[in-house]
Image (cartoon, rainbow, N blue to C red; front, side, top):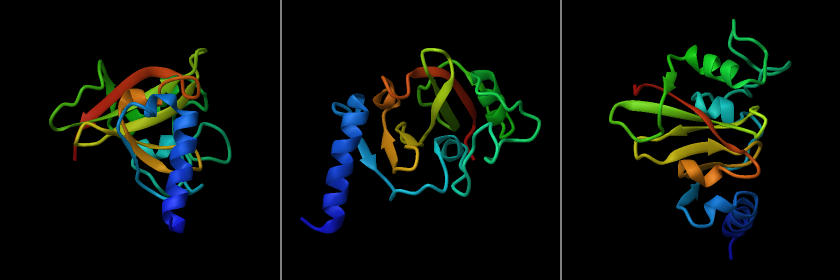
Length: 152
């Protein structure tokens, strides 16, 4: 097994251990590991910086520096997103799922691809393409809100 194949194999074992929902749903590792950006930024289409409502990270101007679902919805609102009811694929619409913990604190975000699959950045790890439910569970919790905007 080549070095790249072994890295993907080890990453697959890690991912399925950390996110048991991936075991029985389709997913693909789509990038190398990088600490440059996080899931919140990646969902916003930003692969240059880490988004989080605490210093020293980037947070959109005018949005409260709070780890609340409302603050995250408002942060994506600065990019033209508004709340929507479902993550169902709709032609011409781009969606973001915001995951929350049992106590309601945002933990993760994923962006829907044109295919209907979702793309996520897993902390400092890889980007992956997955189903929206593939990451729900112990680590990221459940989906607290969907936001959407017209696809560019």
